[in-house]
Every structure is written in C-alpha cells, then in structure tokens.
Image (cartoon, rainbow, N blue to C red; front, side, top):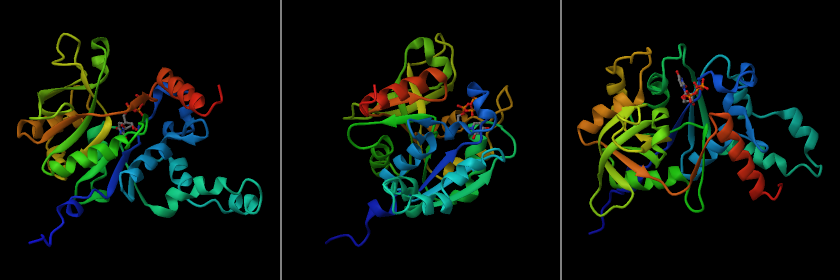
Length: 288
Ligand code: UTP
C-alpha cells in the first residue's frame, strides 16, 4: 500500500538563517558604514548570492540576525519604487527582475543581535524567527559555487536521509590553515565517500592539535535541538559562544554529519579570498 505520509515533504527545510551581525573588521574602513554582506562580487552583494543559494535548495523564508548598523541589508530586499519607476519601460528594465525576484518569492524576517558574542550566540538569537523546525544556516561571506546542485541543496538532500542529525559542510584545507576553522574528526559513513559521522570537533586548533584537515565552512543544516544545546553552552575564553562547542555536544550523541561538498568556496571574509572570487566571477563573465 502506498504510504499516506510523505517523509520528504515532512522534513523539507523551509527556513534559512543568516547570521550577519558581525563587524567585518577585516574589511575596515569600508565596513564602517557598509555591511560586509553588502560588498559586491561584480554587481551583486554577497548576501544576495546567499539568499539565491537558499532559494535553489527550496527555502522560502530568509531569517536575518542583524545589528543596528546593518539597515542596508534590509533595504536591499525591500522595494525601491523610485528606481523601479525610473527604469520601467527603458532598456534597463530587465535589471528589475534580478533586483526584485528574491523579495517577491521569499519572506524576510529580521532580529537584532544586541552583543557580538559569537556565531553560536547569533544563531541562538535567531530562535524566535525559526521556531521548532530544522533550518539551514548560511554565512554569506563564504561564497559557494558549483557546476550542479548548489551546496545547500546537496546538504538538504543528505539531511532527508538523516533527519535526526545536523549537517555541516566541510572542505580539506592546508594543515597550516586549520587554526582559522572548526575542524572535525570522524569516520566515513558506511558506503559513503563524502559524508562523515562526526566523533569530535575542535574550534581553531593549532596544526599540532588538529585531528584532521577537514574544516567546517559556512553552511549548516541544524535541527531545532541545537537551541537547547546553545542555551547551555558556556562562553569560551574570549567570551564567545561557539557553534562548534554546541555541535560537539550533539556529535557525542552521534547526531552530527560532516559533508564534503562538490563545488568551490571562496572565503570572502578576507580580502585575498574576496579578490579571488571577484577574479573568478569576472573571468566566467568574460570581463578579464
Ligand atoms: P566572522 O568572524 O567571519 O565575521 O563571523 P565578522 O566578525 O563580521 O568579521 P571580522 O572577523 O571582524 O572581519 C562569521 C559569521 O558570523 C557572524 C558574522 O556576521 C559572519 O557572518 N557573526 C559573528 C554574528 O552574526 N555575530 C557574532 O557575534 C559573530
């Protein structure tokens, strides 16, 4: 008999959280008045690439954890009637589609993080926007591209097979760079070549301490259990609440999977990675 219950639609992820409250100090002075997430790769701001990736994975609610300095992000996803009126009916009208299509197809919600107490704290701040359901997290300064399905779409497909687990995206980085990342330890899942059952994770280890060179990048799928765990996660020595520490608690219960994605990640949180992304996008557009 055919099941009345469609598991896939039950565990469909509808919401994507964007923790975008950070100060972006590596990009000062530009980030004094312009949010890092509004810096463009060619003509599109990083935050829009992130939203489009979430849309490509079927998500329709974009939940932003912002700060009082980041009004430009909200403005970006709201109508700008003066621009619309001025270019409607002109040769530039086609640009409107790209400007408006995310806002027309998605709901946007916002909450302010009052103190910069780290990524874990930012994600916890987003709880009222998410509620009691699984959700994705995108850090838009990690700009991801792929030839096939987007990285978040690949992760959402894996989540369907492991609905009790959080999924973190990982990539191999040079051992000399592990101290910039959360790093996982684990074993490949049976029959898999790219998904690991995580046994432990450590935030920004020295090369000597790092269990592997598998570094967590800015894409997550989290179960709502993470909020209870974050509530009980202590601040680290720098006073920050780390998502890695909270995930470690769940990893001990066998509830974290690390996924080595297919695609390219540009670390646009630093100037070098930002320039690399700009060059790669410019090349693919035939501009250089
Ligand atoms: P980063 O450390 O990469 O971003 O945090 P940052 O703090 O903005 O940049 P720098 O280091 O000063 O140059 C990773 C992500 O977590 C968010 C950031 O906005 C970024 O998207 N974040 C970090 C918060 O939302 N709140 C925090 O308290 C910390």
